[in-house]
Length: 95
Length: 432
Ligand SMILES: Cc1cc2nc3c(=O)[nH]c(=O)nc-3n(C[C@H](O)[C@H](O)[C@H](O)COP(=O)(O)OP(=O)(O)OC[C@H]3O[C@@H](n4cnc5c(N)ncnc54)[C@H](O)[C@@H]3O)c2cc1C
Ligand code: SF4
Image 1 (cartoon, protein in one colour):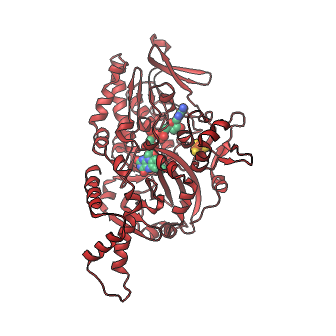
Image 2: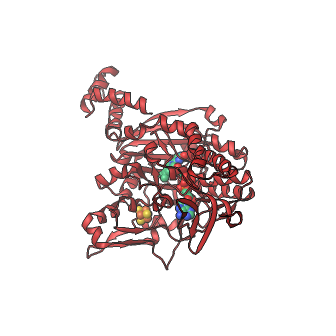
Image 3: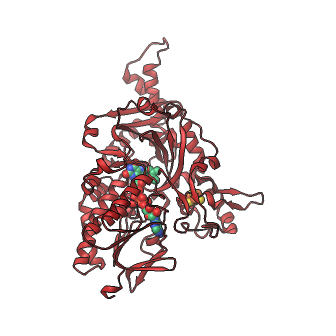
């Protein structure tokens, strides 16, 4: 079976967006220098990361499924990553 | 700290299977317990493939089969080797599995919510929507937790915060896992057209199937796929070892789409409706990943302690989470009763865990992670099996050969050598 593009795939999930506090921040210089940028872009199942025209990494943190994979494979210091504040973020109904 | 400064006897962080069962058992023993979870409701952050080997759960909840929101009882297991166009399956169906209630499929948002309700009934203070930001440590002893402006003081903290376990990592109590000790799980829940599930999988009502997929589905990345039946939906997903995924530079989304496009999945999931798409890390390090699970005022249970076993046939974590919860609750209650919650006082947890089926199985399958790292398993065995069977079934009027010759020529065409086959067979039998 074919699933729709990831953005539409996520449309069925319930997200409670924390507008005040993004839970992912990228150190752009370090991401580029260490090769982490391409790594996290490729690995994220929610396609939270993408490359902007100027080569920097864009972060669509609202779509994050909070698995921690990007944080596990990025070089130390590239990501400031923590779970969203209590009650925010993805809320699975199936799991 | 004097008696009245404690808010609770025990604070459990994480209302997954490990945390909820620990909290429930401690409350049953008469202790005051807080169960904190960062999800809006317990279970809303949790995801698993979904096969719960439920014998330990039913000892904790004897009414599990009557009361718990499980999906189906597994009576049919398949191990499927895949190539791009073929699949070769070992298909094992057995009424005894159903009768005995060995394994059920579950969806965690539902199961964990039920567990939290049971906790509340037992007197646990369940606090969802709260992210614990760190442990409170005083003179080398864990004395509580911090959550935003709030602080909770307690005698013992149970870290049940899952595979990432930032609680212990941030406090310097556990190292960051290496990338070969972690795998990325990507999963979709797909609802099948009404009435289709049982006929497609050949199942009677309340019977379920669990398919473990190996080979082309991960395009050579260490790991595998799964297809499990729920009541009227399927859980379909991939488990991909992080070190391999990074080394090969593949995109997880592409691998997932590749899996779903396979003819086998097409057959089972045709006209299905995507209900939910998610991902989660899997602890794959085995015993080597466990580290210190007892500290002054703290014990670590479930995925936070790296308690997962993946043999290729079965992925287990939830049942080990229950086992660790049982061992931890016993030890924590005894330590509090004896007024010694130091690491020495809590040490019986580790001893009990080691002696339980959890510790025994972790030792038995200690070699499984290493065996599963062998590339041949993902690249070569599927094609070999499919080629042998193709020669047997593809009658094209050319003269036939006996099985031995067919196997030998298929092996010759494959990159596998007989010595490797023998070695993998031997190591596989020993590791799994
Ligand atoms: C794709 C996939 C397939 C799997 N398949 C199977 C299978 O078929 N069978 C099986 O038995 N196991 C399977 N597993 C493993 C199984 O899911 C885990 O072993 C199990 O969920 C571990 O339970 P746990 O309670 O230890 O952790 P979790 O279920 O991860 O629970 C941790 C809890 O802690 C909470 N939390 C974390 N940090 C904080 C914080 N700072 N503050 C507050 N709350 C916090 C989370 O919200 C969560 O509720 C699979 C895993 C994956 C990812
Ligand atoms: S945590 Fe997971 S879902 Fe979120 S950005 Fe990282 S890889 Fe993507």
